[in-house]
Image 1: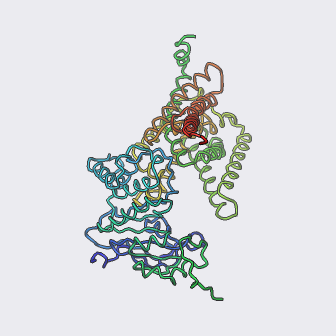
Image 2: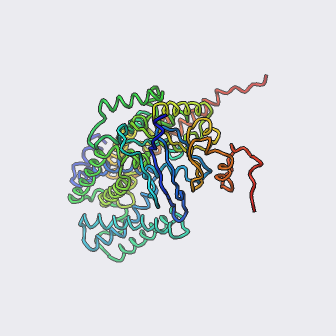
Image 3: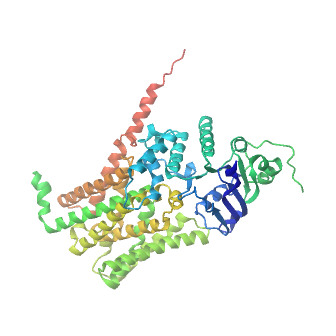
Length: 257
Length: 296
């Protein structure tokens, strides 16, 4: 795949601190264009911090993040972000359609109204994520999977080509998980880049092409099979604050000293 | 008592007309700002903030008289000191943000009370705290008109930014929004409108005109635009009713407006078809009936 030859996101020596506590420490890695990349690691490893720092939400304590370079097919606004479920107030007085319309806001000046093209764009996004029938519902009135698809539709309406998904699989049932993997697979086939923080290592192994394994520091990155080796998983999760449910307990993990 | 006696005759007086106009102006901005405060869960913060403005207002009043600009900056500085001070305290000590804010605002409030008692100004403490909408002067009206117009214009022009910043600030910032500006903007508008409401409602009761219409509307609306409109409409109706009640029964005007709005809120909380107590109970009763307990 020729698209994979070039890196769309490059991190060099990225450090982010919360107070004195480093959340990311000297992380250097890259995300190939058009890849399906999982950000992996235990709780508090800096997965969300990595995604948000791409958006400019955190001040970098050091290093830099480059988004692509001169590449004709990429235009602003290129980054779409799917927030973690619990950061959204689901009681907010807003309908599905209005959420998806937000994807068009960045391209509008304050005095402009949504144009016909914008509305068409929103319609397409609603249709692509199969939420057209729900357009007039308040967002609380949806299932977890549907809620997620609404925010994915917002990302589509934005016209982005890089999708940052923060814990997209958290709290989804089996069916919704299948659906979401289907959607991101389809995006990958369209040449879109997806970077998602993922808790479930098995799921990452099955559905993602690339992985970035973190525990504040970078443990490994590259093709997912090469990243999720037993040695790397041990290194990332050993002594971490949370031993993950999905981790197979292997007798190979020994604690020297 | 005829319709004329109840609704028309009161407004034959100049002070009642000014009071009504002032209420209309403050309802416009109060309904809008209150909605944002409620959605951002800043209702209690706003209340505390309004108390903490007192020393700034009192000092400005003592030094510069009723100069609007002085009052605004006095209040703004007091508000910012409270906000920044509590952020600093919570970061540098063990004290958590809410406790720091709670402690600082009450210190500022006490400082304000002390200042007012010390200065022996023409206006007494009760007036600062509770206002009197029937004593509104033409210059008070000008300030209310300015604050109200500015708020409405900001909401019209920056509606989408305000929506994004309230709903999903990370997305707002990620797509090039000015998060900090939106934050400071809402704070400044709130302080400006509290000052504008000083004469009419007093510093403490003014927030009732902001928050109560907004929570009332919150119980009825599923779209932000509707919420804002219903909130403003509720504020208008509530303050109109409040002024009339105040006139006919001789109640304190600020309290009477807040109580009228309070009735609207409490009634809504019970009868709102989707989010009220009644709806929830009714749903439970129906679901209860739907389950068949049979032993066979």
